[in-house]
Image 1 (cartoon, rainbow, N blue to C red):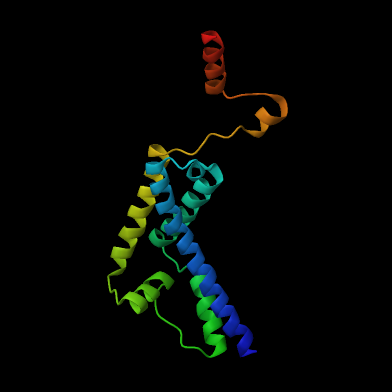
Image 2: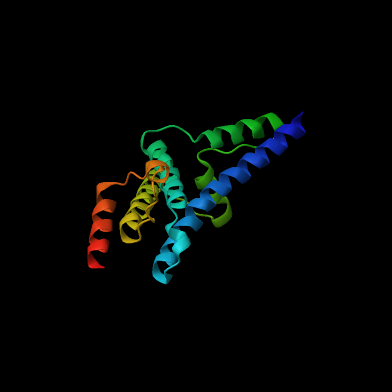
Length: 156
């Protein structure tokens, strides 16, 4: 049974790492994509998922509570007989891997600034507008699209 919990703890840590990596890599890809004109970095679903994921982190940080993935990893580690750690996942591994030590408020500020930077990219390099389901099904368009269509047809 401890082997199952050991594998579970490793799997949760990998998922947690992937979550954090998606946030960082997605941010830098969007930033570089803005500079280089990479259209794929304007994909609405990519950008929306990225913003929502960091928003969830910031909400959890500012309103308290421990990340559910951290709780699950610690539980699995404990059940597997592995040593657990104090604090949060990111803070623990940053301290372990890079010997970084900092106050909790520094992490709160870092997450908040990162979130603000992600949101600012929505204005600097906005996601492509997608046609809504009503437009696709029955041809109803938002008023700004109707105005664009009228002005483009008048130019002809």
